[in-house]
Length: 467
Ligand code: HEM
Image (cartoon, rainbow, N blue to C red; front, side, top):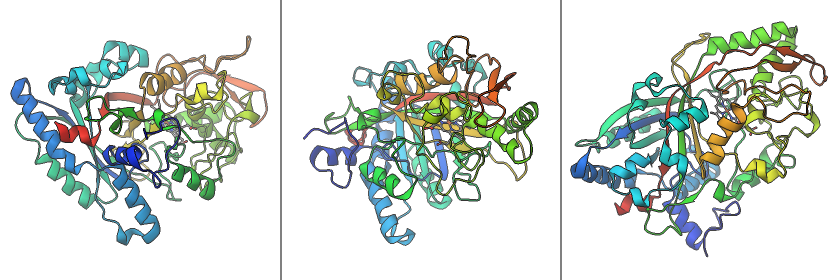
């Protein structure tokens, strides 16, 4: 039976082609793998026939280290049933190739077909579309043609470092390391993962496995209002260069290094609270209006105060907040997932743009420190259609002052206050939570700067073995 891409998958009941698919698919795609400690290597293969041979040898040597999705899922199950003692802490290793990488492998004719992937992130058309800075302003590791990316991540630093060394041992001959990135998980007092501005991150995800949906139903606030289920086709793509595209799948991987100016963001929160004359506990609402959730993850559309964080809620939409007088349209999470309030004809027309986010924070900071540079988010996401998912979200939603479309006479929402790139017009904010009357305020400065990135395809293990 062919793999059913139109629905979520029960991995525990998978047989035949679906089971083979899970054995050949890389981990971290269908479900986030633990990556508290994360290393990313950006690689360039050597030129000519020798470069090609060395690149192929590297990838076949790497194949046994790359973790299959099925292994990851079995490990998670063992952890849940028996606790940490029973689980080998084998780090996640993942690998992706750019279109230039396929070219150097002499496989351009069998490379995945996504147009954005083929263009790449350094391409002028891509940069213009996304509002990204000139490549000359990117960090050095992203400025040259990247051919491959290798990710090594896990719970403990020891095994991750050892695995990284093992992989470095395979980097022989003409393969160059253009850049290295290091991610490190950050947590709040509740143990939830946060990003550098201090907000819980990574909570709202499309779920592709029926087991994960079941857990969402049982262990969280549920799925009755916001259904996180997505079909496999939203993340999986038949791997055209693999031996059997019926069972060999991969996914497009978007990587963006996004620097966060923490001082500027914290000042913007204060400035918004001042201008709206928010007082005492209500001042925290200023930041929540920029993000759409309070720092502890409480959705702003549900309540005017933090506190709903155990577990962080995700079963909400904006149906009772049509005028955006609780959570503004320009809040980051409302821009990037309007949850039915984006003005689309059918809910599905809107939902197709969502993607699986797998980001991790980078950069060291000491307590109380509000850095302006050197820290940020290694934004990572899996897509089955880059143009329709990541690019659409950044370009048509985050960067567009007129999304969501308002009735004539009503003011445009403005840019996504966290990630919007481009000229930032003033935006209107509710002074009182739930009261329609809003106040127009000059835009805050952009506190997130793109420092480089690329589009990759994370191929099937069977492809790597076949080289
Ligand atoms: C430094 C940059 C970024 C920061 C600080 C940031 C922060 C956050 C936070 C705090 C959340 C709420 C947690 C959650 O609901 O999971 C969130 C959600 C989200 N972010 Fe970002 N983000 C960044 C970049 C991006 C980018 C580049 C995109 C896509 C273009 C994006 C798309 C989303 C989406 C789709 C959600 C989930 C919204 C929902 O389903 O309600 N983010 N982000």
